Amino acid sequence: MKETRIVKYIKSLIRNHKYLTVEDIMLLLERYYGLPVRVPSVYYKYKGIIKECRKEVYKERRRKR
Image (tube, rainbow, N blue to C red; front, side, top):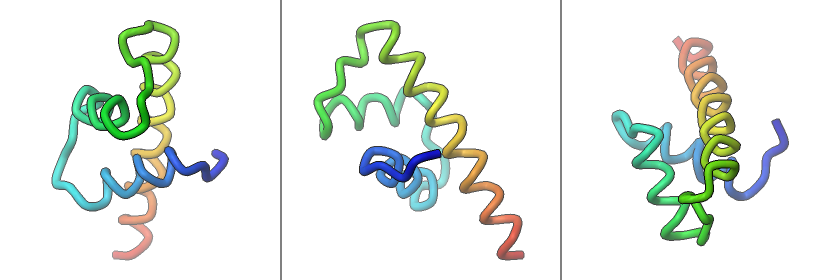
């Protein structure tokens, strides 16, 4: 996955907080990046991106142990 500014932000949220749901992350993206989350295509696109970010962050955690 390409390391864009938004992807780095999502990964940092996942790393630094105990657990955030997809909806919590979406609300933060809407607030700070002005994403139109109400639009279904945008919602599902970023839902997939969040899922991939979660996988990568969890893989990093397993590697550190």
